Image (cartoon, rainbow, N blue to C red; front, side, top):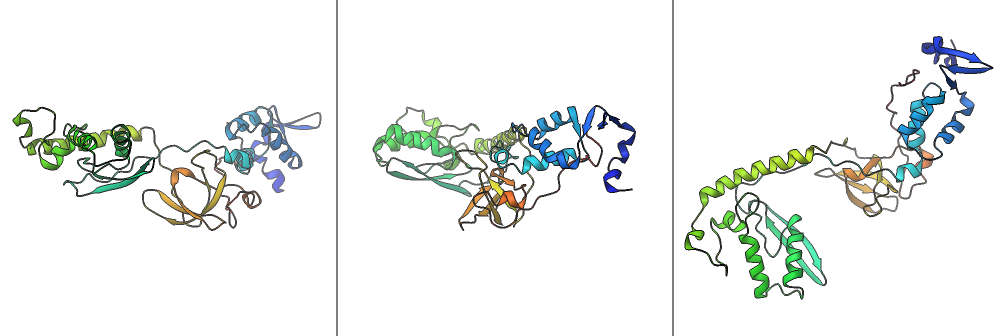
Length: 313
């Protein structure tokens, strides 16, 4: 049996002829020579894979139609550039340290001409003229409100930093209590018992912090799902962080920690990007060459479809 005939064998009892036209149910069976024109017609408004399949199933059919639709959309540069951002992945976190200043974080921020090093203890949240990541915003606001001229040695800024260290966090303990076991004296009136050591409470606060971290991860992961890891040598599209367009491409040259990938462009520049901002380059070699930054051939993975000569329902 000829291959062109064999692909219709499973649906032979559902085929008919009407006025010289071959039908599968009420859908026209499109010959090989006209299929690309049909795909271009379906894709005229760039409706996406799902909507193209829905429209096609109303009126037309040929074996492998779903696979061809997927491949056609994947080869459309406009559709690839305008893909939505990928979903967040499950939260990664390190084990909570057992002792203060066992693990620290550092970051930088700029306010006007002022450059500030942000340094924090991961257990207590103790800032040293700043904080890391989440605390950058808090300390930046503190600088803008109290020391807009950039004088971080002023009494007003030091008092503000002291209040920051004495303010309890969600676990019920302030950074000062986590570090020293008691509050620090400040200009705020307080009874002497307020400065009594609270080591027992610190242990309770640590347990509470563990519970808070578990709850944060649980809630975060409810809206997350993992993305498949990538390998060295893979060609990828990269999402621009400002325009959110997937309009650049490159090749993965190394893999780092925490879902980070080192991507090289044809220009020779190399950047680190998170997995969330990378997509496999699915277009064929010819289309891949049109993308700024691509180097070498792109590999087209096999389409995921169960078409196999039988239409999806």
